[in-house]
Image (cartoon, rainbow, N blue to C red):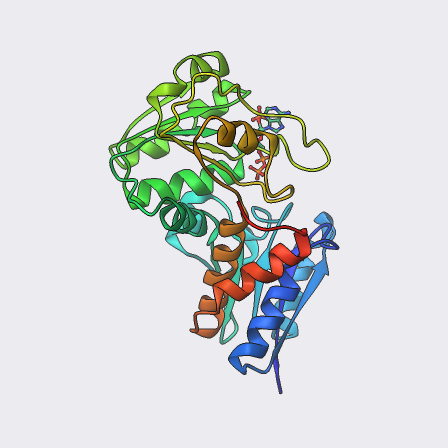
Amino acid sequence: MGKVFGLLGHPVGHSMSPQIHNDAFNKEGIEAVYHAFDVKPELVREAISGLRALQIAGCNVTVPHKLAVMEFLDEIDEEARLIGAVNTIVNQDGKLIGYNTDGRGYVQSLLEEMNSDIKDKRILIIGAGGAARGVLTALLQHGIAHVAITNRTLEKANSFLALANNFSISAEAIDRIDAEERLHEFDVVINTTSVGMSPHIHETPLSLTKLRKESVVSDLIYNPLETTFLKEAKSQGALIINGVGMFVNQAALSFEYWTGKKPDREQMKKIVLQQLGGTTC
Ligand code: ATR
C-alpha cells in the first residue's frame, strides 16, 4: 500500500507542492501520494492527531500553521527550534518529528545562483518575520561576516540580534532610512517581506538608489517571478535572485527527509515555472 504525504496550511488552493511532490514520487518510482489539506487554525491539534491516526508518512506545513504545529509534535529538530517554526514533519514509526528546510533551501539557492561563497559578505535582511528568521538562522549556521536587519517595526529587528550574538557574528538593527542611506555597504540585500507580492506588484520594500552594481539583490517572492524590487536592481546592474530556488530547495530537502532520496530539482523548477508562466531570472 502506498504512503500518504501532505501539506497542512490555510488556504492551500494555490499551492504547487502537490504537483512537484507527486511528480517526484512518480519519477523516483515511489508509491506515494501527496495531498494539500486545508486545515482551519482552530483545528491544528486535531489535524496532527489525524496524521497519527491515519499514519500519514510526512507533511509540509505552511502559513499560518508553522508555529502552531510545534507543541503537538514529539520532537523538534535543533534548526527548527532555533528558527521557531516547522515546515516539515516526518512520521518516524509513529513519532512525529518537526524540521525546517526553508532557510537552508534559501541559502542553498543563494550559493548556487551567486556561484561564490557568502562567508565574507556583508548582508542586509529586509523584514523580521518568520521568513526572515529562517533565512537569518541558515545564514548564521553557514557563517557570514556581518548582518544588518531592517524592518518597518524596528523592535522586531532588534529582537533578532540575540540570535546573531549566539553565533558571535557582528549584527545590527537599522531603520529603513539608515538602510537606504548605507545600501552601498552591503554585498547581498535580501527582501523577506511580502512587499511587492502579487497583487501589489508595484510596491518595493526599500529604495535602491545607493545600491552598488556589484551587489546581489534577492527576493523570497516568486509571484511575480521578477518583483519591481528585482527589476530596479537589475536595471542598476546588480545580479538578481528570485524566490523560485528557495521554494524548490525547501521542497527537495523535505522530500529527502521523507524518502532518503534527492529528487530532480531541475524538474521541480520546471513545474514551478510552468505554473507561474515564465522563465526564471
Ligand atoms: P513571514 O512568515 O512571511 O515572514 P510575518 O512573520 O508576518 O510573515 O512577517 C512579515 C514581515 O514583512 C515583517 O517583517 C513585516 O514588518 P512588521 O514587522 O513591521 O510587521 C513585513 N511587512 C509586511 N508588510 C509590510 C509592508 N507593507 N511594509 C513593510 N514591511 C512589511
